[in-house]
Structure formats: C-alpha cells, structure tokens
Length: 428
Image (cartoon, rainbow, N blue to C red; front, top):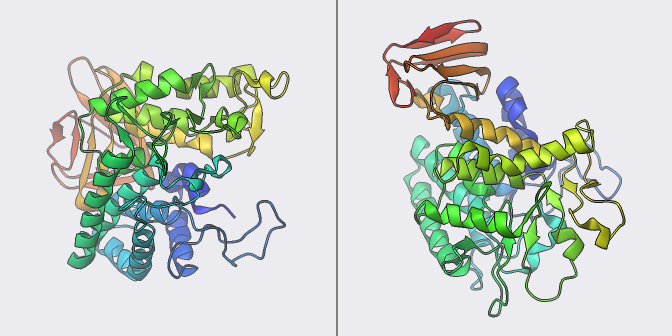
C-alpha cells in the first residue's frame, strides 16, 4: 500500500473525483497510529509485502506532517461535506491529530535544531538527509503542519492546541532564519550542519511544504520579502538545472559519496519551483513552468514513455557514471512524484478555496482573456474572462454551492448565491 508521503504526491485526481476515498484513507491511517502517523498501511518495498492492514514503516519528517495537511485539505476543499458534517468528522479524529502534533514537537526538541524536526528521514531517503541536524524540506513541512493544526484547532474550539501550534510555528520560523536561510546568497540551505558549513547546498523541492500550505490558503510560510523566493529559485536554476529539469541536490559539503544520486532529476522539483514562483508573484507562467516542461518533455518526446513516469531520472551528464544513460528512468518506475504537477493547476488559476466557509476565489497568472480549469473535491469546471472583463464559470463535473458573494475572480465578486450542477454556466 502507498505510504503517506508517496500517496500525497499522486492523490489530487482522487480527491477531485472520489473525495470519500481520501477521507477514508485519512481515517484509516489515524486508526492505525498511536503517536506518530504510520508510514504505510502495510509494509514491503525492499522486502516481501506484509499482510494488509498491518501498518508499519519508518518515523519520518513527511508523514505525520503531510497527514495533518491532508486533514485540513479535506476540510477546505469540501471533501467532508458541509461545515457541520466536516467538523464532526474532524472531532472524531482529533485525538490522532493531537497525538501526531505532540510527536512532531518532540522531534523539535534537540538543541542542534531547536524548534525544527531533527534527524528525520523523508521521501528523499536515498539522499540520506537524516544524517544532518535538520533540512529545509522537512522544516517547511513542519511549519505547514503547525499552520494546519492551528487552523483546525480554532475550527473546533481547542484554544490550547491552537496556541501550542502557533507558538511552535513562530519558534520554527525563527530557527529557519538562523539555521537554514543564507542571507548572503539569498537562498535556503538544503540542510544545517554540525560545524561551520563549507559549501552552500541547494536542494530542489525544499519548498514543497510551502507550496502545499499555499494551496490550502495557509500562505507560503516565510516572513521575509517575496523576493527571498525569487533569489532562492534563481539559485536552484543556477546550480541545479539541466536540460531535463532540476537535479535534487548540489553543493553537498564534505566528501561526495552520493554524487551520482545528488545529480538525479526528481519529479517533484519542477512543480514546486513553478508553484512557488507563481504564488509568490516572482515568476511569470513561462519561466515558472520551464523545469516542469523540461521534465515532462523528456518523458513525452525524448524517451516517448509517458506510461512510465519514474520518480527519478539519471542526470544530464550521467555518462560519468554509466554510459549512454543520460536522463533515463533510474529508480521508482510508475511513481507518484511527477504527479505533483497537478498542483500547478492551482497556481495557474490562483485558486483559493474554503468551501465550508463559503469562499472560492481565483487570481489567474494570465491576463484576460483566459480560460482555465478549476478543481475541488467532487467538482471541476472552467473559469474564464474575456477582453471586456466578463467572467464565466461553468461546471463540468459534480456540484458547487456557495453563498452570495462567496465567488470572485480577480476581485470581481459574483453577488448571488450559487447552487450549480454539471452543465450549468454563470457569467457576470
């Protein structure tokens, strides 16, 4: 069975079409967990598969965090039904949320990385990032979890948990400034080190947690100017780019036993680069989508194998390690990592949704005229604006219900209540 971290990479089409399935998975993971959320509902991977519904796996930096983000996602996208029904569902699993929060905070108590998760493995496991005190990838997911749990706590009236989460967010953010932000370079360090750093490691996809948080209306998590994202993304483009996307890691300090792995191209990096570039307003659509396009063009046009989207592709100069293997599928075939490209739909349309609270807005990355798809739990359609600024929204699948004033596009509010079904169209 998929692990939590891998499942989340590919889950959006299921959320949009089968939201009940996503809610069921979330509750099942909770039922199998006592403190931290278990990695998988059954084990296997490098060993024979274990029995179904016998959970196991590792204690990770992107499992409890991502599971909690998934709970909040179920709420804001409308996957749990109306507000009253959704709050009952959240209250039923609230003990699991609090247990996961407590475990997460315990991982942030090491003095090497106060306020940030210490020494945790993540989905980038073959990079062995857990040997460093903390990483930007795990830390952004930690901040996102604190925001999500704080918001959930406020929804159900748990002021104490909201306060704990909000303070943990502030403490973690302060440590990120100290341990992971390099103000001279204008970029986030891939990881902190125990001694004085000898190089500046840059990890593509380290902003994954920021992109997820923003897609849920929680912001990009960083309190510096938006230009900090521009300068960080410029470092990724300068040091990690190749003709086929972004390699995972450059500038690892000390000996380089992982050189061949560091130079692999991973499927999540391009979408995260594009999402943060668009959401922060620092990149236009063409530049933001460049590395995502390179990755998909390699699979689609050069290798001609879109059926097998791998998680990792060999590097652009792979002949130093294995002849004639440049940018070929290298590991984890038929994998979920490339499917984080779906998040770019949210970034391109500027979609921000909180359906139980009656809010849906769009701030597209394109000037009018445009026509873009939108996706919610159990509903999808198109939103467009013509040269005269007339906005049109249509439903292709499912239903959409919003109160008067709950829908806006580029700040232009639709004044009437909405109760739409497949085939319905409104314009204003």
